[in-house]
Image (cartoon, rainbow, N blue to C red; front, side, top):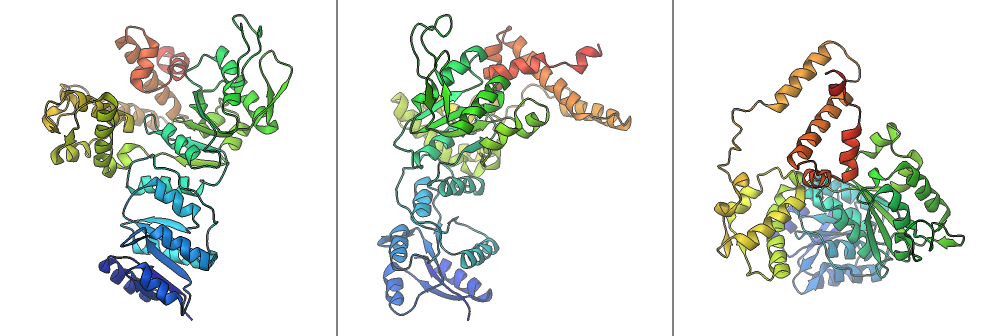
Length: 464
């Protein structure tokens, strides 16, 4: 006998499409417009799976799911929604949803999910209703939301990867806010922004007199985050000596303050983030393999903005509203032409770059509706950059790469990459009149990363 799949959605078009598809795949579908119809049917039979829209006339799909779970704890429920909302995603998973499916979805993907749900059964049950904190509706964003939702009842370590400016700390905060440690503190530290000789004290604290200038006892970030979450940003730039101590703390769950003799218990969830390629750093001996494997129990990738350009309009509206409230500015809106243009750009600085632009537009645009002509010149559609006659750097690299490959020279990639990175770093430092901190900020990297690039042996300098 075919498995029965019930669909509840107030959109008749959705009900028709799903009923036809499910029947064509060999299941026995039944469709309902609201929870009242479904509850009436439940008096006579029980489905094997329910597909429920999250927003229904008169009742939330989450409330309906809770009622279904109370009647049958092992009934798998897939929540469908056309609205991107982290709060709904987390509540759905904590309420026992098997999956949170964003509309529009591919029917073949739905079919695979239905098969999986029918073969696996319902998800875990829990409760809680944490608040939203992220903006987006693209498939890449939705996938990230689903992972956060699935981790909402866990203390498991998470390694967040992604380019600079993608919002890794915001994701870390969301993981904390939707975790069992949400009532505890969220403590963040950028391990690349603190000098190596001070970082150990920042992390683990020190006793009075532990070193010159240690006039008082100080609690480190591990102690400050006790009972909550410690977010270690740019973990890929942590010095090897501290990597060893961090690994020991994670393994043993206790440590000593600098200059101390009393063991301090560690009670924190560790979330780390990096824009660097940790497996590559492990291969080159710059990052401990055992620490990497301990930190990456779960790896969560934050997509760059160019992979979720359909989210740009929502982000622009959010950032303009945010800027207005933060800076006490009159409310501003972006017109359709501006949103379409911004959605066509590459955004090398990712969400951070877009946010800074919106703050500038909110402050400087004279009219309440912002248009393309309010953009800075470098982002205007007519801007050519004044470099039409300049040599194409990509073609120059391609030419040298072809030459090296033709000689069958081994290990071509690393020397070219080093030369390219060092050239960019030197131009930036020269532009900033030797100020490496300013150059690192403008390049979107840490000061330590810039210093490492400049110190690496260069084939270019060796050959000149």
